[in-house]
Length: 235
Image 1: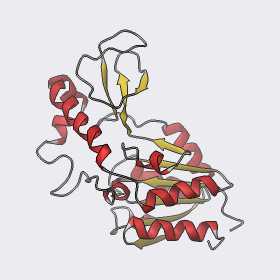
Image 2 (image 1 turned 30 degrees about the vertical axis):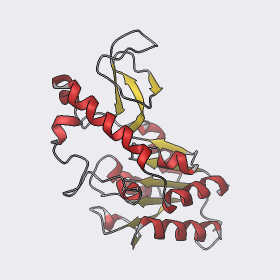
Image 3 (image 1 turned 120 degrees about the vertical axis):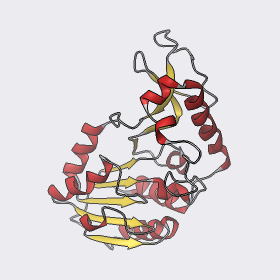
Image 4 (image 1 turned 60 degrees about the vertical axis):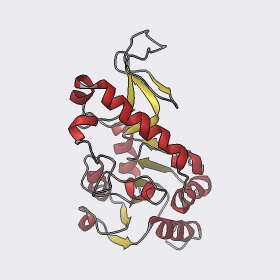
């Protein structure tokens, strides 16, 4: 326990799937009926802004129908109680970590409940529909878009993420496919800097071989048990 002080946790779609938010992989995925190229690229936004804005409006509205699950609650408990450095890096764009109470949190792929000005880069909270041509209050441009990191764009705060990975004693990946970069490479960065590594996932991911240990099962079962062990000094 004394050797573990700084923890980085990466969460992916699998942790929110247990709350009823469908993942982007498989026949029931979020992109069903839409090619990724039609809703999640800069080219799609330029080609058909009405379709892209509507797609994210529907996803934003769907947040009201779901709630955090025991895995989100457990990570919020860890956030509140852990005395060392902790950062929860999520690939998810929902607000379930926040609603569970997590504060040491970074959304690397953006947030559904946020709007981004394509002209000046201003980000602001946004909870309702976001029609094409919405005006940015900061610069006056009619350039607000969903604050989502599209395919081909750089995720947020990569320098900060790399810095905390370099200081981490433990890196834990929860509910990720291990196939989406740069997040899929975080385990290798953490290992390079000497961190212990653990995967908690429903099934083995594309990157399972990089982890020192993998535990398979539902996040709502595995994560609370792991947090209990951490806070109880059993790691």
